Image (cartoon, rainbow, N blue to C red; front, side):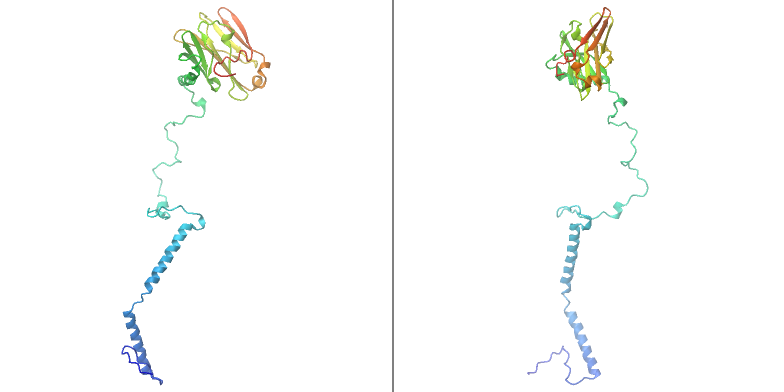
Amino acid sequence: MTDQPQNPDLPTPPPGEPMDDATRARLRARVVAGLDESGHRRPRRWLVPAAAAAAVVVVAGVTAGVALGGDDGPSAPSGPAGSGTADVPPSDEASEAPDGPSDEPTPSDPPSDEPSSEPSSDPSSAPADPDDAVSDAEAACRPELEFILKGADVVASTTSETGSTVFFVKGGKWTACSTHGGRATVFGARALDAPDDKDAYAISSVYPKARTSTFVSAGLVPEGASRFAVGYTFPDGHRTPLTQVSDEEGRTWWSMDYTVTGGPINETNQLELDPITVEVTTDRSTQTYTLDWALDTCRQANHGC
């Protein structure tokens, strides 16, 4: 073999024969010195990419955990990229309740002393204003007057617990409209000087719901009568008196309403019922009329019986 030139920086190879302890210690020192010098000149550059790779693995693991939401179910969606929204749980400071009672009202605080704007569900606790009831009744009746007495003026009204009756006059005719039974019921127009006969006491019928009937009537007290009383007696024995009211012209108007639920009137074919009787008393005489079912109980002009 050809002899290779010796590198002065490298240690001298040991001889073929055994070395004594001094020679072995000297060689060890030179090897250690050479390694330290080599590490100073050549840094371990592989550590940097290895650390970066480890960081990527950690970030990927955290992202996957957030996206899956763990075993507690899906988490709230995060905002779009670049929006600055992060799925970060609230800090302990935000979730902790402040020390001591708060001055701000809470939903559980008792109501204030100011009156509520909500209407009461109990009609008896807040009775309707009669003027409002009449205004509502007129508004409901106006469209129904279109083909009966269009453009008539309101001259008087009566109100009970179950509705209102409004009287309209136009020219030499009048009509009445009732809201008893939950709907506007308009009577056929009559002349102001019409005779005080049986037709003047006919009844309008309304059936707002099953086994319930509402009967209404209205009229004009005969001119010059100083005494006037009317009583309607139904087959169930109920006797209904009148309510009277005067207008600015000095005329007196009357109305009657009776609502009955159940009983023979609603549970029997009305054609088989006894008739309704009307007793009319004036300062001149007392007259009794018999009202037959269907013939004399369908006075309304804007809907069926």
